[in-house]
Amino acid sequence: MSAALLVERLLPVERVTSFQSAAVGDEVLLGLLQTARLAPSANNKQIWWFSLIREAALIAAAAQRAGLTECAAAPVLIAAQAAPGWIKRLHKEQPFFMIDVPIAMSHLSLAAREKDLAIEWVFPPEERGFQDLLGLEQGKRLVALGYCGRPAGTAPRPDVPKRVFTNEIEL
Image (tube, rainbow, N blue to C red; front, side, top):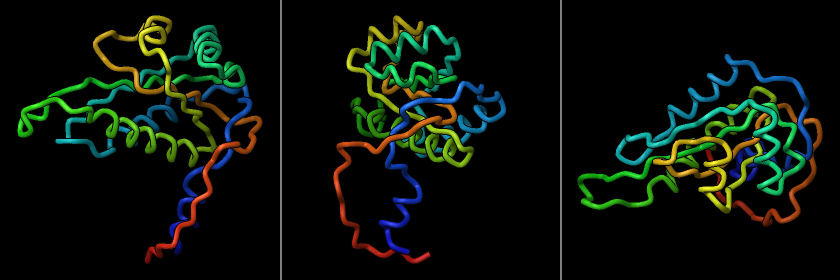
């Protein structure tokens, strides 16, 4: 199987332009969070937290603030957070959360796709403002917000770079 085919199957190229109003069940959301829990991380610390926000007014306000008004009707907002920390053998703090949290986010996205859900991730430009708006814990870094639900409409992403994959993967 070619790498291009694998990437094409795993990652959607379209963005969500609207969400269905149907709620996402607790069992489904807990299953998604379980996949994130299994993601690898530096020194196996798993420094991420995912907060689920279901209050429609907060989701709409966050979407407005992020400039994603098309996501305002998403039934769930996932706040991906991290606690920056030390890796003792390196004797210094590194921004491992910038790698670890996106790996866990990719696990969430792939599991969501398997359940016919979509997550539209956005990286908030003003971390503190979103933390205050959503009532998130201040001691953690807000890495991303994911608007989650069943997509009602999609559109091509206008700025997806064209890449050519030449590697072959044998399965």
